[in-house]
Length: 331
Image 1 (cartoon, rainbow, N blue to C red):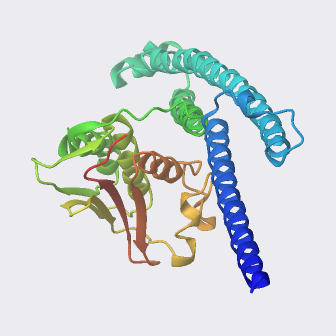
Image 2 (image 1 turned 180 degrees about the vertical axis):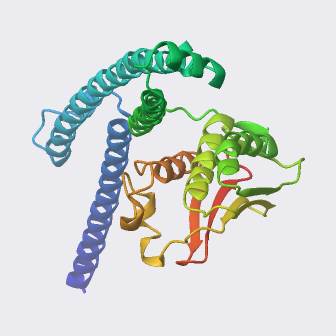
């Protein structure tokens, strides 16, 4: 009988000790998990994590020491990246400033040459000039005008290329800051359309806009206009003379959709993803002007506003680009 009592007491004691150990282990695990979570939060936020280091021969001491080293490496890399980014920003700003002046000077020189008396003579004066100076050659004047046209075209192309590269660099280095506010969407679209009208008129392309004048969406007016213009520019470029482009705005439950539909050559479904990559140009359109960053910039600008762009198109059936902006976008 006595041994049964002793056995019961021992069993109870062992159970109590085991229970205490289990509770203690749970407490230690919870504390370890809390400290680990706190340490990771400090590292991810970029704050000083030296207080997690412990010079003890415990599990946390070993883990904490490695986390502390990882934190220091992370912070050093962040400082290096920040320094490189600042240097790149300065380089881009310097490049932008240095290229504006020579390009502006070229444009001014071209304008002055076009106003030169030799290029603006009346037919009567040319006849008198030829009579007095047989060496005067009308063909030379014609060639001069042609050369000026080429110079002007190439200067515009160079300006477009440099500005496009600068915009892309600013976008990729985070220099572009989206300043979103609740704005009238028709106004933003109107500015983009007014920029593309001259190009569209040259090809006799009709533009149609269907947008409720009261629709307001939170967006960055300047950069959203840039994105819409890039898509419109692409549409005009690849739409034959006499075609049309329709812009339709639809307010949906979550998104406001800006659909830009053209009657151009269309895009093969296999290339729908490729057209949004940097410098991509379809093989059959290399005779067209451009460097292949317009759609890339458009997509990046819209995604910075938590929106997206998708395309629906088939070869020979035109293309429709859909810009979707969040109605309740916050930044």
